[in-house]
Amino acid sequence: FGSLQITGMIILSERLYSLQVKEANRFKKLAENNRINLRLLLPPRGRVFDRFSNLLAENKENYKLIFIPDESVNALDTIRKVTSLINLSYEELIHLNNQLKNKNDNLPIYLKHKLLWHEVARISENIPELSGVSIEMALVRYYNSSTSAHLIGYVGKPSEIDKSRSKVLSLPGSRIGKSGIEYALEREIRGKPGTQKVEVNAHGRVVRELARLEGLPGSDVYLTISMELQEFIHKRLGNNRAGVVLINVQNGDILA
Image 1 (cartoon, rainbow, N blue to C red):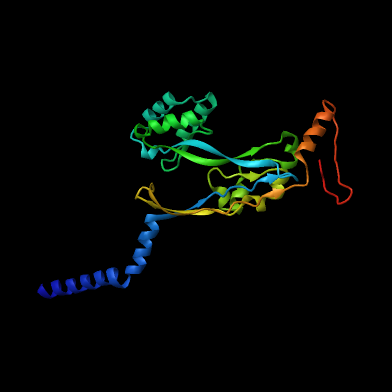
Image 2: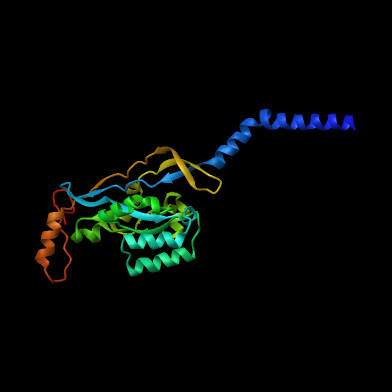
């Protein structure tokens, strides 16, 4: 019986030595991978200018109200408090209801996009009472020339095919060019994503940010068209239907 005890102790000691000394680096890396997550950050899209450096397309700050149900003691009570602080439209309430039905506790629910400044202030003032609620800043595409819309195009949500081609397009809030310059020069305008290293707990919730490397903004694009000339021709046409192309015969530049 004593021999069996000694043998068992030897085997146990050898196993402990193997785990804690021989394979320490391996298990340390596994533990770090479970504790630390590396996330991609959306880069700002490149801006679009006309020939005189007038902004045709740019990015503006947009504040979003997000809610993570898993971090709230009482999700319905929290949402009730939020609706008493800010106004939600009928469409936003319907969208919120659909999100709550199909929710994943670890994923954020967007309660409202494009928060006004007084709404940001009101939520920030009451944030200690709103568990699971936070304000997130994102960049939204804005266009400054309605008469150039058919040239510049627009951005929209990426399709499933687009998402399969790029990890960046799978991120929440990602946008891709759908027509015009936004579509034709998508790769140049999109930019390169940044990275964020965060520490998470056993439930996958973020505890703190460890490091952040901002992405590279997309390249700015300078077109040969003139925004003022576009608007001038648009006014001259009035209610008439026509197609107008104005070309510089010296070098072939499309002016309008």
